[in-house]
Image (cartoon, rainbow, N blue to C red):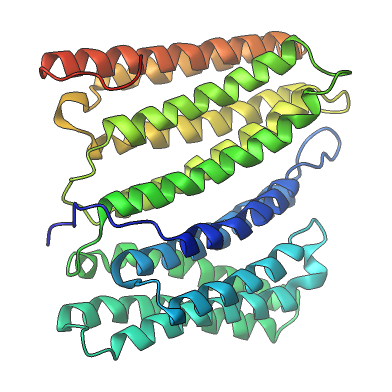
Length: 381
């Protein structure tokens, strides 16, 4: 079934719900903000990835429900408020000594997921739910039910036993929408609304990046590095904005699964980039590691953005040569930055130049595509 192309309004309650993620993301970023012998430990990176998976997946499940069935009713508002309270509690337990909170963390994630389960369960029994709705809802009940059960069972055991059970439940439920993708097509999704909601969530992530670079903008610290760092974040934003506000075709007939899953590396990449920038300026950091961490994040972000060309308007679908040029530019900049790792200012210059080039490539490609199609490029200039 075709996706709905009319613009469903983003409700104030949805924006209010997003606010709790500002705090959650800042706590998650802190997991990889501590260096051990100059690098981020594997356990910290693993905790960071698991936390991102839980938070973003929770947000996505709620967003998809609201997209299809949300009516900004009193019940929906109550569920959102309860979820916000649970997310605040979860966020307070996100730390490098999370092991001590493991059982409490599992109980809270379980309760949070249970509210999502109940939301779908109530929708299943509503008289307006068709057979197609019920078939789709059953897949979400299975997914949220499994995650709820895994979380509650894991909470009953010590860390050594409970953690594998918890992770298994999280990962399996994360992948289940792919397994049930045929059912996803039974009920239309409002693609413009989905794009807008996800884009707003990305802006929250950019907000976390801005807060992270604030220490570079004081009378004592402001300088060329401050300008370069701010330029990097601005260029990353423009690159994302160009793809998801200009190039993407929001009337595409899709259920948006790839859009959803491709944003996980976008979130991860942006947060890795934000943390790496501060590492570059720290004396106790292994600067080679900082550069590698930085470009790993940038490549996650860039490749995920480029991969969304499948949703682009016909005249701006990226060619293989364009994608190769984009990635080659980043690769050359990464090699140059590795060689210059000891000089943080030079690394920032190289990276800023790289981001400027890939944004310039996009503007040229987008403008040329519009001109060939007899269209105006839009309000870029």
